[in-house]
Amino acid sequence: MTTAPATAAQALTGLARIRPAGWLATPMPSDPVDLLVRARQVLSADHPGVNGRVSVVSARYTAAVFVVHRPPPEVPLVLKLHADPAAYAGETLAYALLAETAPIARLYAEAEESLSLLLEYLPEPADWTGTAMPALLAERVAAIHTTSLRLPGEAAEAMAGFTLAALHAAPAPAWITDPPAYDEVLAAHLDAYSPDLVPLGHLDLKSEHLRRRPDGELVLLDVESVRPDVTGLIDLVTLPAVLRQAGHDIGPARALGLYLDATAARGARWTAGSLKAALRAYAAATGLDSLHGLDR
Image (cartoon, rainbow, N blue to C red):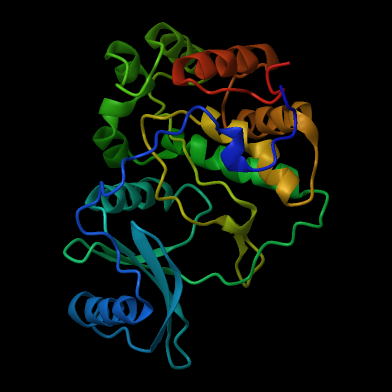
């Protein structure tokens, strides 16, 4: 068993489920000209008044990201287009849940017809040289994992079907390979939190996704993968790898300690023993190949 996985993706070996080729009926165009044409059409139809030069930041099978460079004094914006309606719905849900309670990029507008979002433009990467950065990333991750403890009443009611109590009473999801082990995971979370917690998780953690606002605040980008039926343990498994890639080879024991401290500050009652037991159950439940020393 390795203790320092090379990448966050390798940290999750065994858990990922690969979709078959061609699973999306209308994927995002691959030609840059076609992408720019689509972006301008979306801005004109669904975001009137947002004008400026458009440049492509990234283009994938499922989504494309652009910057809209607006004339001063207007600030640039990020335009994100989805090709997959489910991914779009997931991202809009994530912003609805996290916008007021966790450090993420601001969402300014959304349009269901074009599956598009207008987001805060944050070109300045985080400075990872500081010794406090590992603790800060753990704090940012913990803020998202515990978001539902701070949701306003209406939002909390809307998510009632995804609370720990509801999940514990329901059959295990189809993607779980060991339902009894999954029950252990949920039971451990019930001990660590309240039954009303919605166990958000599955962040796309990468060092480049931590960005700096002009006022110095650090925020996480790209929360489209967050789900209300996946615990934060998946993100804890990737945390040491992400920190290592950013230049902080702190080791699994230190990463676990940072997460314990960060979640405790936000109301969790984890102990080192209960968190390690939950991680072992999570690996069994999901088919995860290795915990990379986090359970030692």
